Length: 427
Image 1: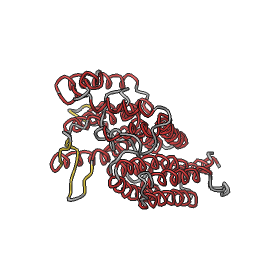
Image 2 (image 1 turned 135 degrees about the horizontal axis):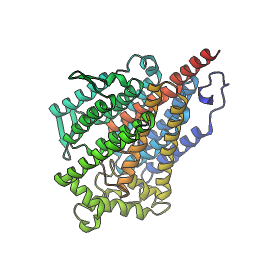
Image 3 (image 1 turned 45 degrees about the vertical axis):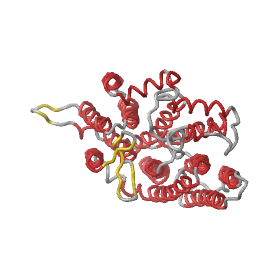
Image 4 (image 1 turned 135 degrees about the vertical axis):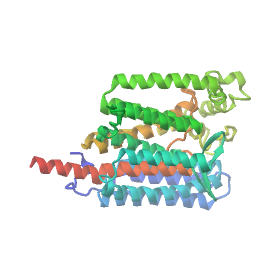
């Protein structure tokens, strides 16, 4: 049995990565506080608070045996790089992001410590699907269009993207299907439908809502999650192929009839053809990554502001410019480690619902990371989604912390409970 779920294991000394993350926090935020030649105490104060939060979180997780502490430490390192870069770009934006970080940390602890109390009671596939449809309808009724996509709900000074939470509900929806596929066996015209075909229709309706909102990046992410869970847990190779063909044909037609998508494809295929126009954003991203070389220009010494939306879609390019290619590789390695720990939790779980839930949440972070990093490096067309825990945005950061809290709960209380149940049966 894995050490982090063994309740009989003796308490060990604090692991070294905690001190490493805290040291990096103090160094990075300390440098930022004096980069202009004038000491800015608030930046150093935020770095100190971040280091203290890292210690407190790890202590709580270890004291109450809440699972894999490496998951939170990996994310702590990602947050250090993300928050420092946001503060470097704009102190105002960085402070706002730090506030969302504190809110997200609170939700992480609440989710990690309470989800195990309700996970057996809320597993209805129709419940999660209904919540997704309700959020879509609310967005269509009271939503606001920003940058051509109607995917924001603004309530006074509070604004959020429902799509960030719909992707979590979708993972629950797919996990419910894996645990009880017969729930989608419907009787239509005296004939029983196949659960997989019912699922396909329901998923394509969800994708249709995303297209209606012009949220193509999230639609692609949802579709990849859908195919991945089907392939891994249902072994439906032919069915996955059919879905991929249908989606591929729909995407081809969409590119031909939607100018917005055609511009994205053109800027991906040949951005230098119109470097001052539709190819400006991606070319500036490539220039920034190239100018950083291996070790970067130094924190605060680059020109990331030349890239439009640098704090959201192109934060990875800014990190590569000022922290170098090695800094970018560090980001990728951290996400790979996070996915590895999530898959490890998935393999240890036994119940189909919790196993597929852990897998879905993990690949959500993994594929979202691939889509945005692939987009800004011109490996794939730009999708416009955020880099988890690094990009600016309250909705993105909060939803990422909820995913982290769910994974923490799955790796702790729920995994330990399943192991105990199996051991009791064996005895």
